[in-house]
Image 1: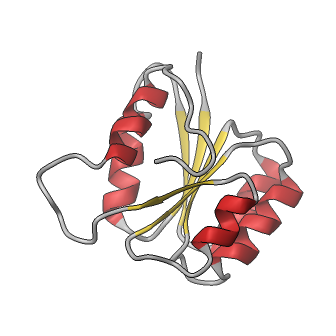
Image 2: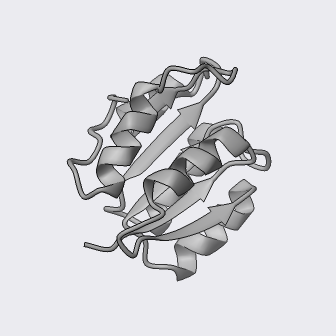
Image 3: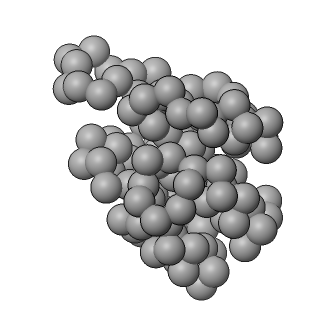
Length: 131
């Protein structure tokens, strides 16, 4: 089954991981670099998953999640960050999966990236609050 994923991040590690996970089986990927760009994309593109970097410039993580949930109710959202974000707890209480990624380029794959690869291959989706 083909998916359309919107990813909003200026972090090349996040964008590359999402690209690798969804770069086959006919999946489509829309990459946004700011909160305003993702709001525009969510408003006009039918998507199956939105991946938001809480450190994306333009809007705070919690505000961005709230706006995306309002524009695209029912679309699963995964929030990612490379540092513990004060909004992460509030975001997870909104039914959004949250993953804190390592800030460096560690050799071992992070569970979030492994889960992304499973989703990209048609495996089970992430649940809220779980990487």
